Length: 97
Length: 202
Image 1 (tube, chains in turn cyan, brown):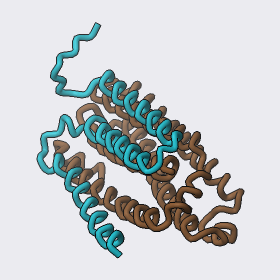
Image 2 (cartoon, chains in turn red, blue):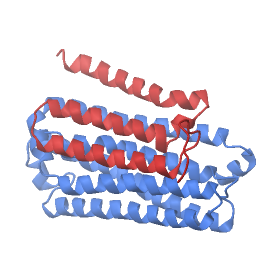
Image 3 (tube, helix red, strand yellow):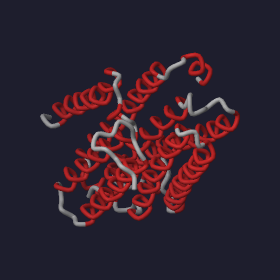
Image 4 (cartoon, each protein chain N blue to C red):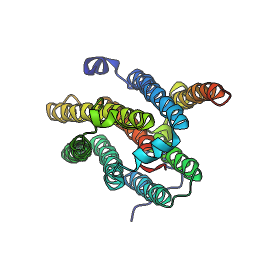
């Protein structure tokens, strides 16, 4: 029996395994939703699940949970805000033509 | 790169540099995702028709293979840090095998498309509606650049395998392996978005 405290400072085999299983389960969910033909709702749902999976990878596999460097902690939010601006500005043009 | 790390002493600078590189990689794919979003908005029916031709089975299989490879390489660095070089090398080899499996499945998918005359600028493809030409153009470009990143990853893992043998990637100095894991996780994140957008959304 291993004694894992509630506040883990370092990743363990178990925490990696849990994340891996969560990623596979989320894939199964998104594939199932894709097969249901729920129309435009499927776009929102699969992108939401993709965002959840990406967050799991960033936080655990890329160790952002254990990261102390302030710049490294900010990089992912900055990239996604930039992409949101690009996509938002482009569609503000496309949608109003 | 390894020489710089050897002199750095601690991993702060090397890791920050890797993250900056990863941010540029995400912006590179971000531009392609923007193109996808626009063309999909302009040609919703063509994109739907074309996406039906991809194999969901192979797409799902490859997604799971890629997640498994991220898991095994995470274990490799865990064992390296604990000083268990033999297990670190074993899990590195499993990771390389999984990455090769991903490329093999991708190869079969592309081969099937080529067999049906679907490849960039082919006569069969150009005879199709405009939206389908755009869809397959983006499909081959984005999964192609992604597959290139997977191949680079296999190269990096192989080099690190030998560097562990040689003794220049050690439990005290695992930064090269850690940075490669950051790179590999980024490859994962890109696939996480590619998979639903090309294979699932109808």
